[in-house]
Amino acid sequence: MPADPDVLRAPLVVSFPFTRSLGPVQSAFLTGLRERTVLGVRTEAGTVLVPPVEYDPETAAELRDLVEVGTTGTVTTWAWNPEPRPGQPLTTPFAWVLVRLDGAGTALLHALDAPGPDHVRTGLRVRVRWAAERHGAITDIACFEPCDDTADGPEDPEPRAHDGAFTDPVTGIVAPARLDYTYTPGRAQTAWLNALAERRTVGERCPSCTQVYVPPRGACPTCGVATTERVEVGPRGTVTTYCVVNIKAKNLDIDVPYVYAHIALDGAGLALHGRIAGIPYDQVRMGLRVEPVWTDGARYPDHYRPSGEPDADYDTYKELL
Image (cartoon, rainbow, N blue to C red; front, side, top):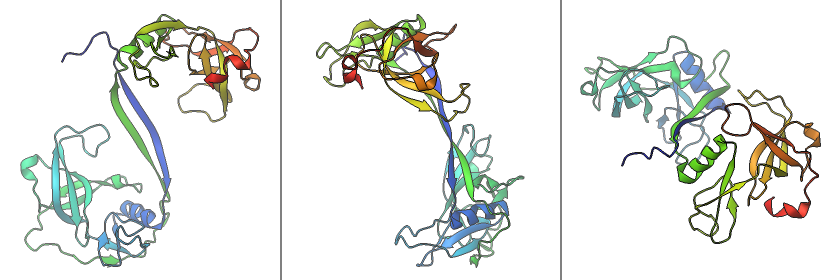
């Protein structure tokens, strides 16, 4: 079915840095990679887990018996990736593989650099290709590559005990999390966004309970019926609740502290979010009457400022808290 040209679409990226501290097992594993050493951990049953974990997945017992395994191994299963995405280990087509390193009882997921899917198979012998620069992360293994030790099997199948001690151990990591997708707001929110481009705020009224939803959702979440009657609200409104922001957001050119508030626009049945400016942050209050401030070319108000009207009576907005 062809896309509706009247419905808005836009690429959207959600990303943030995920920061975590490392316990002794994960610290030793990642520091070992920096030093071109692969460590696993032995369970009470004798199975060597690679990557290592801090607790036995079967008994929940704490695990601390670190061992060094080989840097060669065997592919246990694989899938070809013909179109690598940004941030993946290789920029050319490659195979995702599970590799059971020599001496390990479990398999490690990583990339295999191969000319094509015809060069990959279960049972293929591979070895680690180390990154030129290593910092204590799984990316210190740049990828795996095929090797030619199939004749005699693994050279060193027995893992060796390791104390996990390294100079300058890695104690924490920052892993970027990112989601890329195309956002389609749908009929109701497309109309709302188009109205905002004209510096108007438009909601939709439920034909059953008469609640006016801003932004419109296309259906009333209370009554479960479609909403099609468009109602222009605002532009002025009332601060119902608010918070003072004291932590500066990355890539946001706004000095802290500043106020972010719920604002009930006149005629709307629920409050929307907006930043309050044009007044000291400690003078913002519930009931403050505000109006939108637009910047040239913007599709939505930059912020709201006091309108100069008397504060709204609590009874007029208490149902919107």
